[in-house]
Length: 211
Image (cartoon, rainbow, N blue to C red; front, side, top):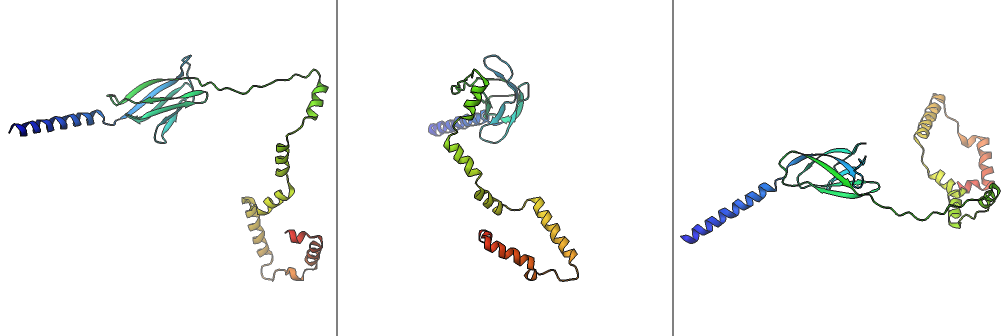
């Protein structure tokens, strides 16, 4: 009998403990409002990205650094801005209020730039001579010549489809041709001597094969 009573009391205690843990970890919606400031000067950092980790919801702080976002307890907020390191804030599970105010500090991110040498020319003539005799790297020159290659441009022009204006013009031309030759037979280019002359000339020049 004592064994059954002990087991019953243990089960009741375990159930109560699990119920308390579940109540503590209950997810609730919270309105987070705050301001983003620089950690070294406490000056407002405007236009900071505020994202909720794990989904695509977020917001952007205004010019004064103020932001407002709806999230759930336990969510992680990610703060990012150009020139500053990313900062994280985990919304506590123990919040009792539906609103929470936050002042988020952002640390500046140091970016090392390559060394730049500034050369000063004594006279304009020396600068002009050096500029005109500057050797352009072959890889950039080759890339420019390839982009301006006539054959490549011609192939792209041939394979390029009509634009919206081109399709509209083609449709209007076809419609105009149907109205012009309404009630009569349209002309046949097989009997057109000018078309035959152009065909023979293109055949002799070799442009017909290219087309």
